[in-house]
Image (cartoon, rainbow, N blue to C red; front, side, top):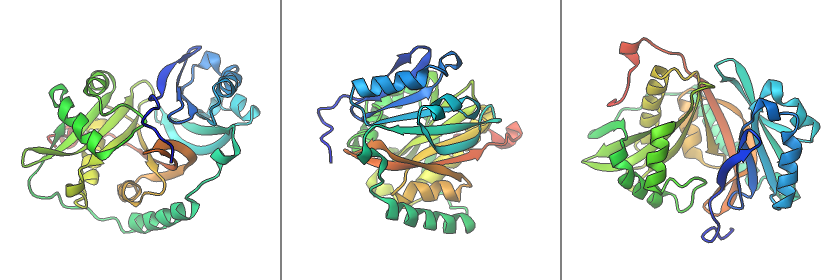
Length: 297
């Protein structure tokens, strides 16, 4: 396990006209959004930057029709998400490994066990009843301090600074809708929907439940409410990137009708070690407003 206490969080910046996240925390460059004007040149630039900074991986998310320059530079396709852009074009999630150890899964057997259970749960999905005393709503800026404390308690480390109230308020004002569950007046579970309005897709992420309140299906309750609101906001496709060796969240998404799109090997630093991540997706069909507008949900 690596010592993450002294490592700064990865930063988000532009390279040409493209948006990247990079740093030693995840020991990688993540091409979050490629500018079409950069498509021919960006694969080489990413490889040069990774070698200069001694990163062990490059992870790129690109439209399928724009992937050829990456494939020609040795990137491999790990994941394909149909209807990712505007509910029409697929996204490819591509990986380029600069060090041999980074491309070898440490949890391959466990990953398969998780997927076996997910298939069983998907075939026998049942609606879970909402526990008594649950109050669910979208979070507001004045909730940020309490939200940050919950995230800090659940996640000793995290790829993004969700333990910082200022970060929560900033992202809440731009492109992320946070959802919370309160029980007896106490915030006990959180999640977020990170929207790409131009591409009409949304990442369902940042699920966190306090230890004493787990096992009650709160993540599924949150996800159901998130989907309702995202349909109302005209998002076409929802997806998530979940820890591959973890039964809980993978089962939640399988039960809720998400489809497995592929696996990213040693992709993300979780609490000081790199983990494989499963990608799940679900088309969101918009329902009539009266049936669909969610939370308080």
